Amino acid sequence: MSIKRQIEASIENDFFKGKIIVILGARQVGKSTLIKMLPSCSSNPTLWLDGENTDVLQLLKNANSERLKQLSANNKIVVIDEAQKIENIGSILKLFADYNKDIQVIASGSSAFELRNTLNEPLTGRKFEYKLYPLSFIEMADHNGLLNEIRQLPQRLIYGYYPEIVNNPKDAERLLRFLSDSYLYKDIFLFKGIKKPEKMLELLKLLAWQIGSEVNFNELSNSLKIDNQTVESYIEMLEQAFVIYRLPAYHTNQRTELKKSKKIYFNDLGIRNALINDFRHIEIRNDAGVLFENFVINEIRKQNEYHQTYANFYFWRNSDQREIDLIIEKNNQLRTIEIKWNPSKRVLLTKSFTNIYGTTDFTVIHRENFFELLESFDFK
Image (cartoon, rainbow, N blue to C red):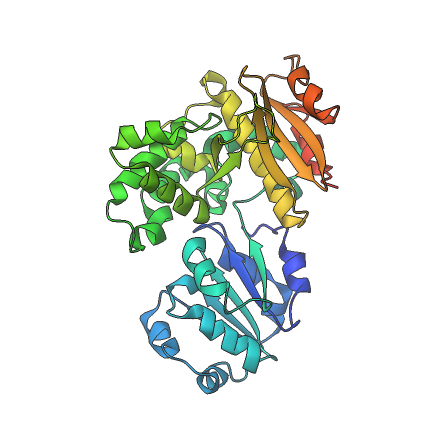
């Protein structure tokens, strides 16, 4: 079952503009499926090259502009999948961009920390870059109908939005266990800096228990018996591989504000729940609030990325433990959001914040109104 992705039209609009199209995202989020659904790929001769195939790796090894021209002969589009596996991929794509301008090249990769490092310098000014996440609420509401997708919220909080999981709900638990059992982190484990991958999995499980809470690197370091620098390095790799992301603390120069704190959330809740081996129904869980908080922030971040609105995201807390779940900052304007699973809970914006920053656009998102706000969300 193919589900139309929100960024399809934006990518299609960037075809044949003389730039490489780069699509980044975790394994299994649907990058290859998205590319196949693009109208230009179905209407033009297209060459597919898989970076995990040894013959492709050999063919592209030390490739020059003439070999690339021969390789792409009679094709208007060249797709390079799992591009991070290919040696000197940045230089290869630069040759395409400089000497094969009539060919549209699409490179997709699941390991941002490798792919970005090899692309940024060679492809400066030569690429359009997109990030693809697990399916969004908006995409599924368009596909299933709004009412049906609203009714699916309890399922989404437990099993997440990976396409394979959404398309196979009866087998969701088994498939998620497979995804979370190292397959999702395959590229990270192959990275030369990872000597003890079991420590990274232990770290992931600890982070899974702490979503929505401030992360203390010293505590993680002591629990895992590894140094702080390694903990931070592992977290950065997991973030660049689209497994988790960090939400920093918002602050100016107020002495009472927390400045270095960070919260960590998961890009997909199904993966998080698989890591802690808990697929119980949302109504009998004690973590429903943080799951819903993670869900809402995920969906807002997806819309920010897909609409290319470039807002910044933070949380806020002071030394008196007054807190705001989410702050969206753009053009020096702040929007403050509280996220509550219980719709009847009365919430006010804390005066500790307004005394510093004045009044802001304040919104309370809960399980009975989240869909209205996601559908109409405006970052301007």
